[in-house]
Length: 300
Image (cartoon, rainbow, N blue to C red; front, side):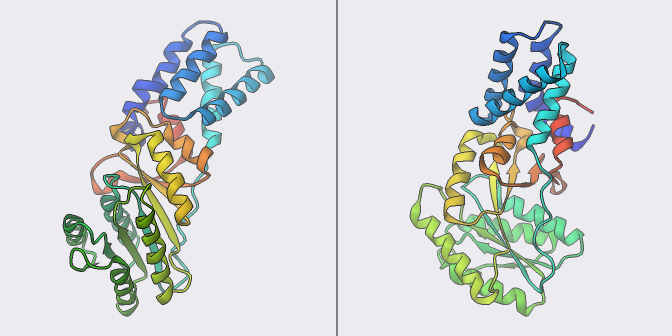
């Protein structure tokens, strides 16, 4: 069983697996469409994305003369896969120092995702340094320092309560001085409704550019997969305040509502670079659209 199939077991069993049961051996009729619509919405795919899927699926049924349930299920997989796109490679090459700013609300798994991303990059030969930009919580600083020790990556940190923008300036300067080629910046877990904290993100971005003019080169938004449609609302607010370039979806193994991944692509137009499918360092994996869509239906 692949890591995708294992990680998406709850979503597969609770929602997408039910589609096969709904179809059964019955004919395709209005009740079939109503059942599929309900399942997709309940999986946190969202109303707009669900309607897009149904429209395309009905068009295929008419166009291809689909009559059997197994044909309809195959068509549904293909329609769902078509909503997803393979994410572009992170824009962190071709310059002496690349800066990744990581944002998200409290509890989204942001700091852990930073450690997992740093570990991936180190394993690929990159020289990584971390910045503990969440200066509001001493525990956040300590957590990142602990992760840094575990994966053997240096962490630039200040005192709790210190100015995060000043800390980030020091971190970018230190990264250049030490010859590192990737700096990943943690930020405070901000409520997306708090305007002042969002403004501070813009300030941090400006500070980065004083040292590296075109930084940050990626702004990755970490979304908690267990929060479903709430995560989409958070994403919209963050995108208004900072130029979010991509998404990391965490805790997909802990939710039955993995349909929200489709809504990220369709409603937000943002690429999903990585998904978290477990707690181990290696359980944050590169997002593969075809494997993801297939794993919603199959255990293999």
